[in-house]
Length: 545
Image 1 (cartoon, helix red, strand yellow):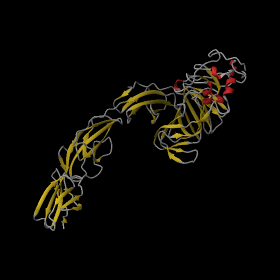
Image 2: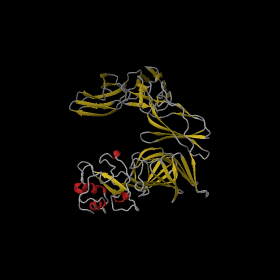
Image 3: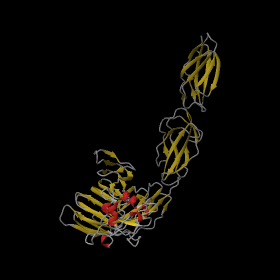
Image 4: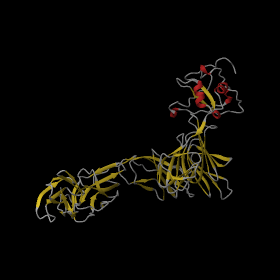
């Protein structure tokens, strides 16, 4: 190595900036080879490298400490780059780092969406727990889907969508320091996955999926993989995939599929995928559902429709169809991707026609039918009826004691129905009811309230306790939910034939001033705004010594 300072870059090196220190999305990926004449590595043994460009305020020693594995000192990196003194490097200068020298550490994946029944099996304990959104998946963990689906995001932003009845094992989840590159090894034991992988660098980052009969090595692509006891099938829709038996893979480009059978010795079968269907124009923004999606007829025996949420990747629906139409319905407001693909005679999906879709439903106020405003009913479970005025709406009735509906007494279930019973019996009294409609999961409309009186008799009022303080007595009684006020009577004999005091009170307590040495009796009954009968509660004796 020469003692003279190296010339300023880019004269010294091929420069490609990969990583913005705080913004990895702006990084570029490059592979350089030692045969370029700048290092002591011979052209017969090219070394995959990563080129890092120093940012303002960074020093070579800081960068080496952050990026290099512990057994690779900064002095060795200087030697590799034929640089005598790292202090001469500043912002804009670049250093070449062999990928094998970079720090590596486990980097968990994350579940971005989960629907239905999906379990996470811990690689450490073997314990099964329901998989939830934002759950972390670590090396050795397994995902077992039953009737559910899950979308998993890897450290580099790659996405794996797991279909029902699948088992996926995470054998390796490694990240190369701050390079933003990963080494991912998965095993699909059974079922189906749809995968979109970020571009990886040859000889460096790695993404492989193993099945019981095949292996798929990915370089930045979108593809689907299915495996069962009969074998493994692959469909590549973007990029290319190295696929086949271990050690015997072939490169499968976009637009082609491949299969490897476990039941015969035919070897790897490669075929062109059915072309994407010719979809009839569909409005990019839907303001009412259901709507019918149609496409031109083809020779394909069946078609498959998959709907994904754009933001989370959630697998909303998957359907195999005969004919050339599909009714889109029961979607919440939001952005979606609709994938339409033809199926061949083996059931293999072809190239998908991908259509972005925005659902923007607006709920409309329902029309109340019965009971009429101010009406009375004798049934404690009255039927409420209304008419829906929007599309793809659900509704429920809400019942309260006040017009502001601060405290709901009863409701009904959300349903696309126009009639419902309350969730519990209604005691005698006056109520207010309304109907709330919802569309698209977040658009709500509410009717004006109506008054309703449930006939019957109010329950008797029971006195809870009596407190004596000097010549004053304070009486407490139970609250009756549907009572507006309470009538109190005071008598000197238990038959209440001679009432010496009577008052109407809004609260559930009253203070009475009595003459010591005399016996009194007090009783109460609940009063309602409606035409309800009420009964007196049992009398209570009062006595001041």
